[in-house]
Figure: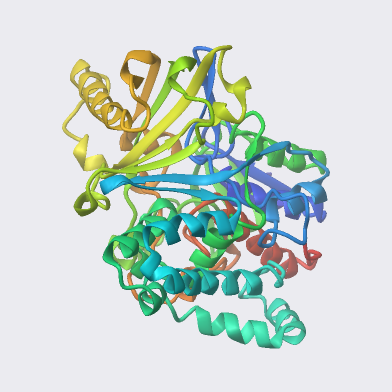
Length: 503
């Protein structure tokens, strides 16, 4: 007979691991199946040549020690509930922006200090700047007072609406607005509006007009409350702690185990079939895959296929991991940077450079006297399809492109090219191979003007099949997929008769 559990989770991304950990802690038996030999997906770490690199994510919200600060403070609350410690280091600057015409803005944890940077360059927009960022603050004030839960759970909605009726209505109204539309009500300077577009693009890979105000309120206000905190040991510390939490309460995370298909009987999900033929049954199945990978690959029902055009498909990434001589990093250098050379190209492939130097906060990630750097730009699989990934031409093309990007980073780190001692590169094809994501995409985005509530929630058209991850509300980013995991666990637990306590 096939093994049977309460819940199967497909994929050990942060959303799926969060859902599994909370369900297992509640007493529901769970198994997480993961294709790779490590957890976390794009929020993971890997080691090479004595260095430890963040595979993708490196900006983390939700780790504030004080629950009175920080929107929902999800990571701190989750790990406290699991009894698994995750040590972090406060990051005093979320991102340091470097833009054309000498326009530099470090986004300090201290909100007033950040705003003073903008006032200094745009004194004529002082009132508009204050009013726009106050709008984001008002969204934060609402969200930070509401408990996390599923928007499809009528009990949750009734509880929140009953306790906070005015704030619930206000939040509903704010879902009607975009970040860019709100900015343009108060601000008129085109250079400043470009910066606000870049503020959005830095995490949503869309301009501000395409980004819901509610999402912006989370990311662009909480950085001044809960702040940005980096996990000791790198981004992989987060999924590794979630795995420990699952196992602590009797659950299982099975690596090198790829789910080939969801088992469907009479229109309902009944379990999964692994590559190799093994079948495992469950009362509920949670997919952490993208909406395209779930319904175009592992659910075998042509009626449920999701066309690409249903959402905006975010690009993938070209990534560069460098081990460098420590002398190239000056004293007081910030961890995260974004570089734009030309405003007309910032949203084109490779137009914006994302850069992090985690060893300025955690020196243990590199040998003594060295630094680990991570540089990445948007890219697509079609740009690299012409190469045989095992061939020399592919390797040369990757190195040449990487060198051209490193040369641009010398705008903030002069002499960087001469200090490189180790270089590892990854194309969108690498993302496809490791993450099992359609075209290595950062995920599905809402189309401009769509209400954030139109983002898929945790239920799917298939009975007993649920979803977590960046295809679901609220979207991309580690704190967002963590929320999706909490929301999914909350809904599934109630359906299985073991409702969760609020975090």
